[in-house]
Length: 173
Image (cartoon, rainbow, N blue to C red; front, side, top):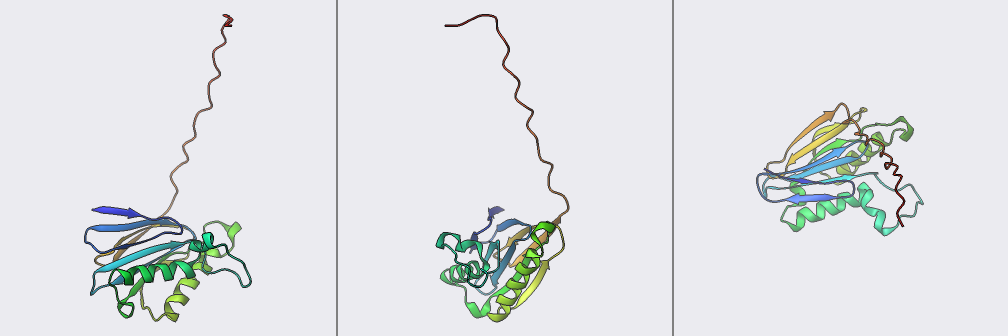
């Protein structure tokens, strides 16, 4: 099986069997879309739902927002042959991982579900909220997603401090 990993601000669309799109989420959201008839699936990964009212966003930062990420994913799928009226969605992420960020994860999940409802895209499986990170694997050809909670981040491997250079009594010119 081939894996296509995506990170914040990215999306992938797959049209062949045996390929999984994967990502790791905290407060971010991943939306998986699938057209069962065309066997086309895609996933995005976005950081925030939408800009605050009146907020100015630079063009190079638009990929961070779900509003833009959703349109990019839908359009990419339609370019590969998916039909918008056949799309079905699954939504993952939106954890409130760090209290310092408030309820950003909840807001992200609310945005994704509201967007899909507004666009008349039915939502199947969801796994949002809570306080844990998630790993998502989406078999795009079949439309099957597997979401597992990441209970603990791997330990940070600390590098030993550098050793001081040995002191030599030989003087070099």
